[in-house]
Amino acid sequence: MGVISNGTTLLDAGALDSGIATGDMTLISTSTASSSATIDITSGIDSTYKEYIFKFIDIHQATDGADFQFQVDTGTNTSYNQTITSMGILSYHQEDDSAAALGAHSGSAILHQETGFQDLGRSLGNDNDQSLSGELHLFEPSSTTFVKHFMGVINEAANDNGTNQRFVAGYVNTTTAITRIRFKADSGNIDSGTIKMYGIK
Amino acid sequence: MALISNGTTIFDAGSMASGLGGSMVFIKKLTASGSATLSFVDGSDGVVLDDTYKEYLFIFKDIHPSADNENFAMNFSVDTGSNYNVTKTTTYFQAYHNENDSVTALGYSSNKDLAQSTDFQYLSNSIGSDNDQQTAGIVHLFNPSSTTFVKHFISRFNIANSSEYTVDNYVAGYGNTTSAVDAIQFKMTSGNIDAGTICLYGIS
Image (cartoon, rainbow over all chains, first blue to last red):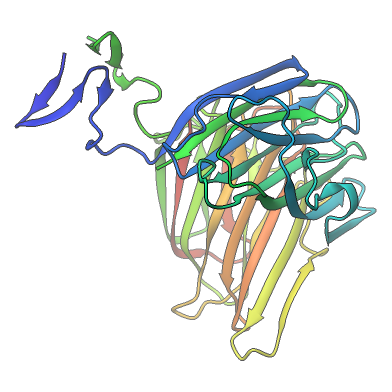
């Protein structure tokens, strides 16, 4: 059944008409971790949106000190080994006030034309109340012309009992469309947490 | 009565089906006018700050202090606003540049962060009170209703500061409590919020 008002179609065939104003941030999927080795999002990443946002809500890992990471892939591939060059910033402060500083990521925290997983959070605590929250933006993954830029910002409760704010940015150095993304811990499982994927019109 | 089209529920029980509308839902706007504090309290005056959303977003526009060189700050409550005194550990860094181009820098501000403190957390500091000066920015608050995890927040503000600088301000951290946060208060650490608006959104 369609609904038409004053000659304008408001909804039809189970969907709001594209001309009807709604919000420009659309929830596409929600993934919930439950002792998960990986969280793979393999649908919904296409040319529908020019920007995608992944929201991380209280990601809690099974292994103390483990890192929270992502990689992407193309088509229906499952290798999750695209070439990435990245950079990052860390601002941290210990609960006992013994250390606080701001600095650039180096070493294994960043990638230079490497196919490994990109860290979003590092050295996370696994106390019952410790977790990570934040977001990752992925720009125009369906482009077959350009590299694929990403930017993330995370706050985490670290395994040495401090707060870490991390900024991660870079690009996936491919002109093939990206269609899927994988999140995992570098050691052990993702014990719990929620990942929501949104499209930005 | 529900409205169903082609087997898909469009409206039911007074709301649009999930996924059909936008995911950033306006909840409440507060407007300062010589205000000592501005508070969002769950269940009060139309405010929702509970498990309805996993993330809340506050947007601050034209926050103008009543006196020069004031600091804009926030605190959480776990007792619906009776006390704003949640323990927090936070980070604070700034990038800044003055109008006469004599100073530019990026650095950590070790005197503005908190280590297991119940004090109000600065979001913007040293705000100018010239008629055209103010601060604006955003705060993300994640899963405040959790009774399991700490409460992460991430903020970013820009400041027209009292010494004629633009300051890009980054503050983040967590409320170190496993009690549900159900209220949040904003204020100047001295004097009033002369003008400005704060809008609260839920991210569905």
